[in-house]
Length: 307
Image 1 (tube, rainbow, N blue to C red):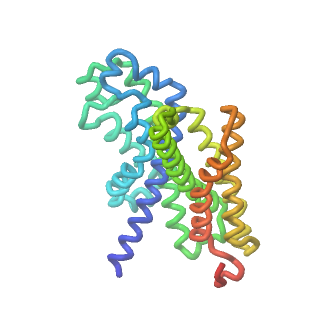
Image 2: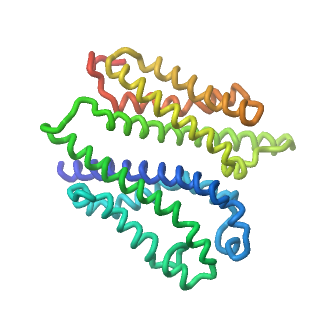
Image 3: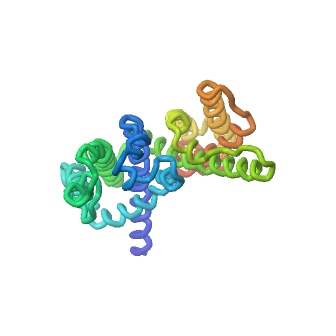
């Protein structure tokens, strides 16, 4: 029993690490890639021999493979999790470990590291350019993760347990919205591959998946969808807990939201959109959100009823 509880605790911790890492990686990567124009920088002399073009398929897939890195982080942090929670400045200790070992003093000759400066031909300006993204991403990751773990630890103590604390509700809404983003990505890729298969059969032009994935305008559509979903989840969850809404109503509402947001965005930004595609795009995110609300929020009234 203890072994089972230990595994459940670890998997729960790993899930939180994965979410915190993946979300901060995506947000800061998207911001800094546009601030510093990574696409153009990677084409410069010497840099292009070290970095792949930003529109290569494995670069585009990078954000979607970050949960694997998050799991590795979770394995490494698991033994010191309690230490980080108990220390007043646990977030600073974690960030210090990431900066000293993971950024400045990596065993490999990575950019922005001492080894990278000594043993690569990368210019100094490139090493400096990479620091804002990785320093800010690891800082926010450290603060968020330690705060999250501390809140969960305190919630298990009866004397400090609170009824529906505001920050806990916000974190839950953000978590569910993150998983809905994964649903957008899966459906988007399936639609793109389907269109390209049909185009290959008919001899017409297909969709450039790599260029579309690397497009800031296209990626920003999902950022807007994430914000709208998180805010709506926060609002809807309270009504679900109070038994004021049914699951099928929640599903239909989010299906409408997750279809109308991409449709409106593409219509305004790109000049056109296809309603059936938008409906398909919003189907899986709506299902994920509905399951997330059903799983993560308990009803305060008639909680034992089947919905």
